Length: 439
Image (cartoon, rainbow, N blue to C red; front, side, top):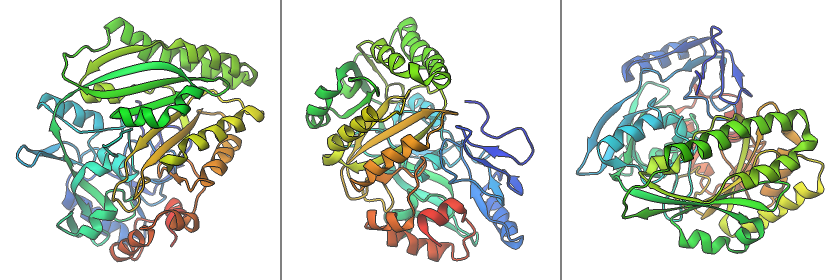
């Protein structure tokens, strides 16, 4: 990934390039005390404050014209507790660095998303997740966190200490304060066997519940304008490790999934009429394969083709109906969609603003190549997903506001009450938070 921060002084843009901010100043505190001082000075100057990670959100969740806090110097592992089986890590540490460091120690997170470029605070604050029958999002693996609030107070939060804040701050949207450290549950490193296999849309949807039930981690991609899907099943293995071959892995993960796909997306953006033919070719390009490796090398993949994304969590029992409605919409519309639709699942959790809060969920994510007009497609998808009481991913494009979200989240009022107490003057507010949380 290239540097998230634009070279122009005091200009920041996100990974996808669809959000730009010009803060009054940027700060890179090197300690909790320095951060508290940054907050104090910002408050005195009448400036709002937003922490930012690697900019992998597609919303303006981190945008501000006040003080933008960069996490460059708040990185590294504070400590590993092998008795409690936890790791405490500075908030600005990229997930990829955490994963590699844990692996060197013979340790691992239980579940993770499909990319690992984000910082730990950015990923957890927006509800980053992978797919899992029993294991939930990255935030659900948090056992404690450290939060600096608007008045400079440093709160250590867990199920036993400030439990009301802990229930909210694990997915805090940057609205409650600045997360400075996160403690995750970990376990001894294990092996996963990945089985990737082409499958028809009709078969996947007919067998969806069985595929989810029989596999620890199941996901699939449907290629619009085709009846083709690519499925992936990840299950724990006794080994031995059998990673993809160096050449075959490069062909699948770099040449086909990134290089040729980049060319196909560029051609499709220039000549939309070619997209259905390209989709049929792309959907048949990836062959079945099986490999076994440590978790982060199986869960995550390189994502070099830049895109914009919308993702909704719907009740798991509604997933197939929502998908079939989405497919029918694409087929009867003039839309030309170059990116596959991604489907994952998660068990219910107990985090106030988790998209899986209180209900078993299925995630349906739609993407378009960066620079492609996305409004018509995303609007049509959002209309379908909200018909199933869908909850939008906090870091991905959506148009929902506090009126809708307060009805979709039973614990929404609990979160806003914590916010009112910790940030009554809205030091951490911005336009996005005003829309999704109210003021």
